[in-house]
Amino acid sequence: MIIGLIGIIIPGLPTTPLMILAAACFAKSSQKFYDWIINNKLFGHHVKNYREGKGIPKKSKPIILSTLWIFVLFAVFVAIPTSAPPISKISTLILATIGTIFILNIPNLQNQVD
Image (cartoon, rainbow, N blue to C red):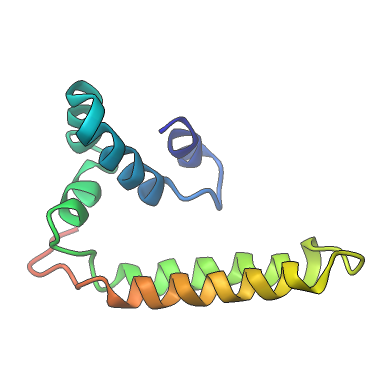
């Protein structure tokens, strides 16, 4: 949850996915923290919609995927040194592809007003 909160301030650090993960953990361990996440004005409605299986807004998917791939391609071509084992670049691309498939398979939220 702390890393997700830091993501509000730091660009590139995903707030909502980390809060979804925190909410899933708190749903089993701390009702107080779970309620705080779900009722948060900034990201609570996103977490709640995802947890209830309603999905994410259709217009969010291109933003999510383009951000994901900008950071992945930056990592592969700039941040990961050429001296690193090739598996580091390959695994980054494979994980990004899996993430892309996951995002595309999340249902589109219906009747969403933003």
